[in-house]
Length: 366
Figure (cartoon, rainbow, N blue to C red):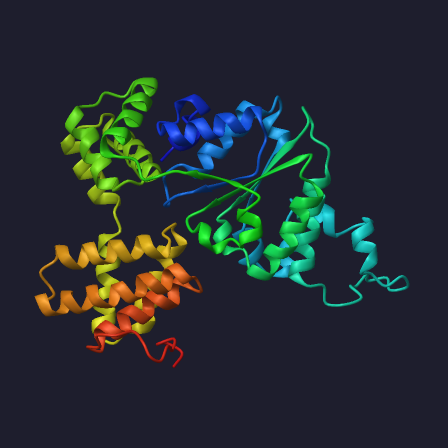
């Protein structure tokens, strides 16, 4: 799609958030700053809601809203973190922190010891939290996908929250609030965002289409909203794709466009490769899909939908796949590696097994 994404250009203001309970809690946080845990399924607008909060709370939100995706830390190497333009100023050069870890006589300025990732991350967050706000009396530090923060590091984060609670509002967005330790949850007010109903999604799409002057029909918007399955982000992007392709959103245009941009063929390839014993090929396809933006639970749901829609598998095959999917869904909720769990599912299904455990092995490496 050419041009800016609608999810950015039509990000909601605080008063435009359709879910009244969440809107009221966020509005209260503008007048009475508080730490928050914004929780809900993928794609329901957690990040958009925190940005709306910051725009309402700060005279200069570009300066006083700091957003960090946890994956920027824990899914990257120490070298990648140290050389990231956002963080290198805290970790390199002549900062007080960097001098602690450099040899005074070594021209190469090598580190004295193998600085841990936890030390790096803790220092970066402390620096962000310690900066004075550019406007007003506090700033907002958002940690996206907070369920991925390691438990040992959460203890350090709790201390940072205690030290800088007067000048920094901490906001955690997460699909799994139970992954946060009790001391952090107890210092935050929960904001629950549920999956929007089809009518709520249609209402958002109508507003955007009117602003963009895109012709639409009611059944076209309903098709897009229903296909998104409660994922508001997906619905907005699907509507934009349809409008870009067909210059209107009708039932026919949406069906043709969304069918073309879907990943059904790739998912069918992964299923077929697994059944043929080509687990390396199946895993490569899963890697590509996960890299394209799916998370594990979403890709699992899409895999089940594609398997049901075709005529390639018997009822017994589908029944076993769904039974294995239940176990895989539980494993995905615990964490670890989405790719491993999904590849394990396909391997167990292809082998005719009805259980994923015990024992667990990476089916490719084993």
